[in-house]
Image (cartoon, rainbow, N blue to C red; front, side, top):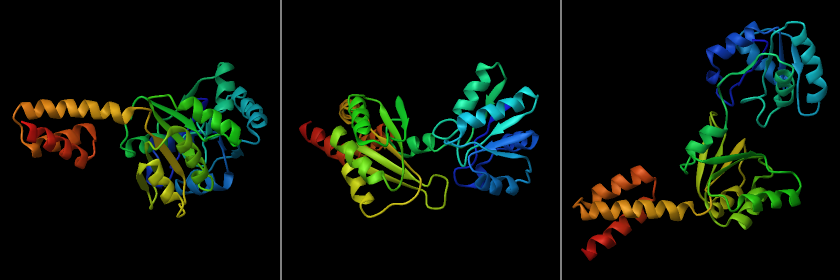
Length: 273
């Protein structure tokens, strides 16, 4: 394949796929976000190829150079420091130029912080909206959060460690105290998923939190909608003669509802019968 975007590990080097290793070994040139960072990974897998720096500050200029390699019939692989190129890392502009010019191109499946964080959050996984990093300017961030506030889908953001507390506080002002999860250091030694309300997550951030972060926030009205669903199911099971223990286990397992809330609801209904 003339052009291939190759995901690389976001933490654990064992997350590199056999196919990704083969493609990199077969490439004539590898475009990477940082040659020093990628050099460590490539040496680990015994890969020695010419490296070209492709980062956010030179992507347009570098894309022209890489297009010349494709024109010469060379195989070009694109990687980022970690994860899948082209999402919140460089690679999209070059990839778009290549397919517009008619070159065959492919993207390998592989490591990404997005989906593991979404599942680890314990929130409704679909539908969801991924936005990447919030805008740098406060006015633009506020407009973005206000536009997302009415949405019922789960929201996913990447956060920079030194900006996380401020950005989460701004979201909480617009979204309200919704359920959320801050997932950090995915696939690394200190991986952690902090689940709770946005207020609880802010309290944790105020103590200082390091590492690469993904914030997952529930959509508007999701908690009320979920509650209605499991409450209807619980009431039907009570009427069907199931025990409180069975109902609590079934509902918490199926709907990911808080165990204490389910038990309290079931006991109240049971006493009325």
